[in-house]
Length: 112
Length: 114
Image 1 (spheres, one colour):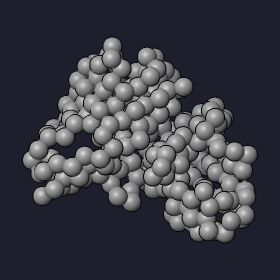
Image 2 (image 1 turned 180 degrees about the horizontal axis):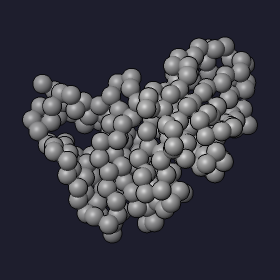
Image 3 (image 1 turned 180 degrees about the vertical axis):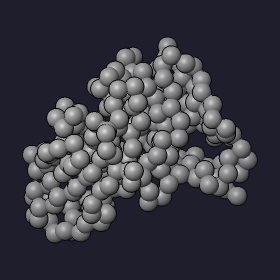
Image 4 (image 1 turned 90 degrees about the horizontal axis):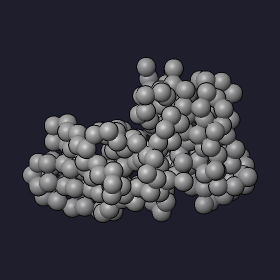
């Protein structure tokens, strides 16, 4: 089955800095890569996703890049703010039966 | 739509007792997932239903765990008998299916087995 590795497990940055979270996946057939944000005590919620037919996608301060050859994808957050503090999960899935396999999560802490 | 609804939000039970977690997916979604979240293991997929049929239950840890989806609007996850190591947050999520692949999570049930 699919295996998703996520790094780092914890990331501490100063407000205004950029943050990068990286994930690798094992199944070359995976074609959908969502990123979820989970604030303390709340549910995971989708913040951005990318499909295998594109290499990069942006949404305001958030961007995701995908390298299919290397089987890795990354989340980039620019101009971080304290409200960006949360746990971020990457995931990978494939085909018509969408079963996301999640990474272990990255705890992002943005210091004011 | 109120989103994915789970109940109860919190459950404290004694070891050996039966626990039933409930989930109402978003109307019209044909995929439903049960996940378990712990600090040690992160988000683990327990079981996946498509059109009310269990498709992948390879993540169910052992025979003490069972899940049902009797209709498109309701699913249960049962643990019998419960053990302290089952303590975790259990999430239910649903997805529209087809080209729309986002998973929408419920608020979760925090289970504590003492």
